[in-house]
Amino acid sequence: MMAERKLLVLFGSQTGTAQDMAERIGREATRRHLQCRVEALDSCDLANLIHEPLVVFVCATTGQGDPPDNMKMFWRFLFRKNLPPGSLCQLDYAVLGLGDSSYPKFNFVAKKLHKRVLQLGGNPLLPVALGDDQHDLGPDAVVDPWLVALWDKILALYPLPPGLEIISPDTRLPPKYTLHYLPEDSPPPEGALPQPTALRAVPSELRPFAAPVVSNQRVTAQSHFQDVRLIEFDITGSAITFSAGDVVMIQPQNCPEDVQQFCQLLRLDPDRHFVLKPTEPGTSLPPLLPQPCTIRHLVTHYLDISCVPRRSFFELLSYFSTNELEREKLQEFSSAQGQEELYSYCNRPRRTTLEALWDFPHTTCAIPADYLLDLIPRIRPRAFSIASSLLAHPDRIQILMAVVQYKTRLSKPRRGLCSTWLASLNPEQGDVRVPLWVKKGGMKFPADPATPVIMIGPGTGVAPFRAAIQERVAQGRRGNCLFFGCRQKSKDFYCQAEWEELVAKGFLTLFTAFSRDQEEKVYVQHRIQENRRLVWELLSTGNAHVYLAGNAKQMPVAVAEALQSVLQLEGGLSPSEAEEHLSALERSQRFQSETWS
Image 1 (tube, helix red, strand yellow):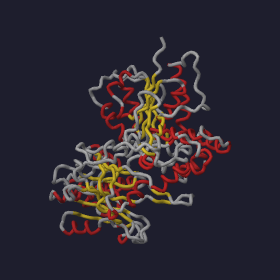
Image 2 (image 1 turned 90 degrees about the vertical axis):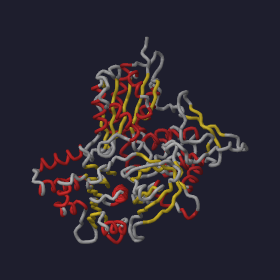
Image 3 (image 1 turned 60 degrees about the vertical axis):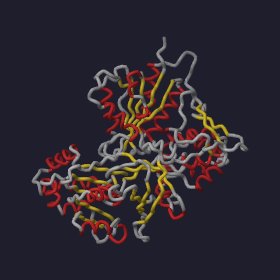
Image 4 (image 1 turned 120 degrees about the vertical axis):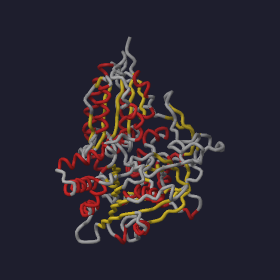
């Protein structure tokens, strides 16, 4: 009897790339007539993993070698010490990692996952694949040949059933859902388009709290190139609690102008009601979409038309094209050979999905509405460090947010979807609400009130430290030392009056680095070295905890080198001893960092 031809593809994805890759594997499995499920790792029933014959893991690495949010429960489960060594001996598996080799812990999660599944008795079909964003062709340079080898292995284990052949790439696969329009004259059912509201349950991604915006204040000078906002939300009645170091997740939406353009391009009536139905039995409906729904709601709140489209977008788009020139270009963008061209067209200039649709007008107007959810990913929630304490601001959450805007070779400036939307909200114009919920952050501050803390937060990296300082001051704790860096004292010294008041009251020791206020540039790492005696004293006799937050490129390395320099010059350690001492502080959670790119 032929073995059941089942494949489970599990992904851990922070930005959507790993999910996109997992769905690509799912489509290729369908072409090979495999029963395939594609799920986030945390959505999978882990107890059933021991019964799965064949699994492909696709996972990204985030931050400092951390697993993505949607695989953290799985990660904890996998590394439980009481799992028997042979518990996955029935499992054939493969691991595809997606990372960035400019970070020290390149593809750390994929490597560790591969090693752990091997320890538990799993049988690897292939060596772990390590996709790299830094490669000229991106991760596809590794992924494409790896997938060819993977399908060879899988088809050797699970040959095609008699009489069946691999479905040709020229054949379009059916959509995940079908979209059924309701009659135009039918009134929308009561409560058809619910907005997130306060519930007794603690808000979550599936049940966000619609928080009123209380204030939206620009904290940089009008003449400064960057618009940075301190935004306050009212969470009264939400059951939300949080501590310093936690993050607030915000679900953004597309602007009305983009929604209107999209609907015009695709010739969609934005006010038409529809219901979604899964094509395959067992496929669950998107949990965040109301049923019935309008096209306007779908495009405004769900479809990420501002994201940079991926290779799979052009592949699917090519099936709808009846224009020969457009189809040729779309097929080139979706081919392995066309990835350099696609990178130049999309990734380098950060072209959006909406802009790409404009460039293929004959194809765009032929897109069937059924394929919208296959073609365009959903809008991801954005994470912001909470910049306030409940002890100082009861029933409030504040964030410190830089509005993302930059130039590429395209004439129109690039703008961040979430930050641009949030910056546009004016609470003086009525009841303005934002869907949000809170998640535990990576940084934990010491419970012992006597423990001093050294916080290093250039730019908006200071946000979690503002929360920590407010919390500690409300508890009467001193021993708060902050290294803050920005460009100019007169332009972007966030919360200056607040810090200076705390310094005057003896609650805060503050060191500032204004990089552009003098000829030579001065950064936080220079201030650490200048004040190395105090830093050493806090570390050696006060058992201080050190925290770092901010941009992930050069700054974390420069700060680590400055701290190692303190350990050498004041502590008398050799370079290798200083490096090991800093690593030991990391392992014991006395040195914690939260950085982003």
